[in-house]
Every structure is written in C-alpha cells, then in structure tokens.
Image (cartoon, rainbow, N blue to C red):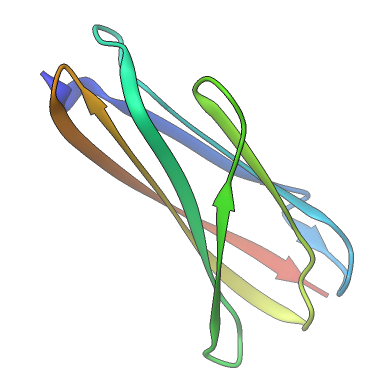
Length: 101
C-alpha cells in the first residue's frame, strides 16, 4: 500500500543572510511502487506572519527550488509532497526552518 511512502526534505544552507540564495530540496519515494503525478510545494512562513508559496521542480523523485529570503528571522517552511502509488493518493509533509541573519 501507500503507507510505506517516505519523504525527505532539506534547506541548504540552513542559515543565510537576507537576499542570499537558499536551495530547497525534497523527494518522495515508495519502496514497492512507482509514483505518478508527483507534485511538491513549499509554503514559507515569514517572521511577519505572511507566507509565500513555491513549487519545487525537477524530474524523478527529487525536486528543487531556489528561494531568496527578504527579511531576517526564523522562517518556517512546510514542504508538502503528493503523488499516486498504485492508484492510491499519498501525501506527506515535512517541516523545515531557516534562520535568516
């Protein structure tokens, strides 16, 4: 079933200055099934309470997006991955944080 789906996500570097590029990466995989219709997006919650959304792009199971934070402070990032495995929909969310100094 789709319960065995795993995800991974990261932000490089985990601390950056305002305007410096941060690369968000994420992947979704399943040990027993080929995933179809994979989409991964990140919702970045800024220290001022506003949020922005990015679609991670790429091929295969790994997706990336470049993001340039505009303000200092801790940014919370929810990375949500969705796909189909053997006709079943799966969804996984990973939480990241980036410290903008």
